[in-house]
Amino acid sequence: MKFLFFPMQAHGHVNPMLPLIQELVSRGDEVVVYVTREFEAAIRNTGASPQLLDDSLALPSNLGSLPGLGGAGGQAMKKAMPFMLGLMRRSLHKTPQLVEQARAERADCVVYDPMAVWGRAAGAMLGLPAAIFQTSFGLSHSPTIKNAMRANMKGPPPPSALLAIGRLLLTSEVMHWRHGLPRLSPQSMFSTVEELNIIPVPRKYQPDAGNFDERFLFVGPSVLPRNDRGDFPLEQLEGKPVLLVSLGTTPMNMRPDFYKACFEAFRDTRWQVVMACGKSLDPATLGTAPSNVLVRQHVPQLEVLERARVFLTHGGMNSTMEGLWNGVPLAVFPQFADQPLNASRVTELGLGLTLSPQDALDPKALRESIERLDTDPGYRSRVAEFQKELREAGGPRRAADALHQFAASRRGGSPQKAA
Image (cartoon, rainbow, N blue to C red; front, top):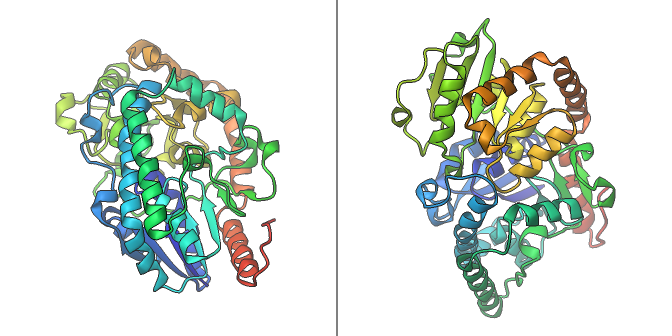
């Protein structure tokens, strides 16, 4: 079979798809993935074929330096909304050209990220079976998540976001009449449902899991070595208690105040700290790091997690699942989007704790939180139990089985629901 994949152009959206893509390739399937140049090598490493998108569909490299995006919570999300909606609007303009490229592939099935509206449109216009690969929680049937998102926003969107929504909907209407693209609505932007919806978390982790019917397949995370060690000195971690500190890859997580608090919290302690500050922040601007702190713009996260005792994270879904997959308790300092939801879920399940902005920026409170996670045996015990659930959820093999069944049944002309 031949599959077309359309991810959102961000590490937290591309990386979770890679194990499934590699699994399909290993079965002899052809897989074409539409990505910007930043992700070309990662796609080639799976054995799939990258189809390059215009770089205008990438996240702006200066996003982290825009006013208001350096804070945490709903305010950062409000500030980010106009830029994300603008990216979706630009993608609609590119969709007719992209659909013509995709038509030439003569594929059997489309798999898209709900944030990649061009993938949704391509599936509809090509008349192909279309499945969703959701990179976070299932949203459509979870009142808990919807209520939490509204509370986190703390009020209505700013005028700039409302204007961006209006422009996106207008563009959608124009592209519908000119090219037949399916219309967007405020509801469908983020909670579209297909006949098959693959969600890379275990069902136990999903809020309101009982509301999700057989169309939703909770396969747990797919963790695939990324061969991204580079020159990172993993040997320096041997025999030491390792603390990994990372707020993720997106420029919206650029927090020099937090990294400096970590310097003070763990200076001259027993911890070997590995800190990833992101490509948007020059480590030199943080000042001289303590001798027990390794600071890099990028670190090989999976390899470090294999050696870590605690993970201090922003709580992006990818990082959360990778930490728990490796049996590491989490201290979550959420910034925006689904991260507060992950922080709440991790805390509710006893897999870690949530750091308030006050505690995350207070060296004494920060150090005490990390020590608590490392020395309280309850955390490590609960994480070990949850780790079993992650590894028994089915992962890429179960997702690939479902995709094959789905594509074959739809190709036969009688839509069926995936089991």
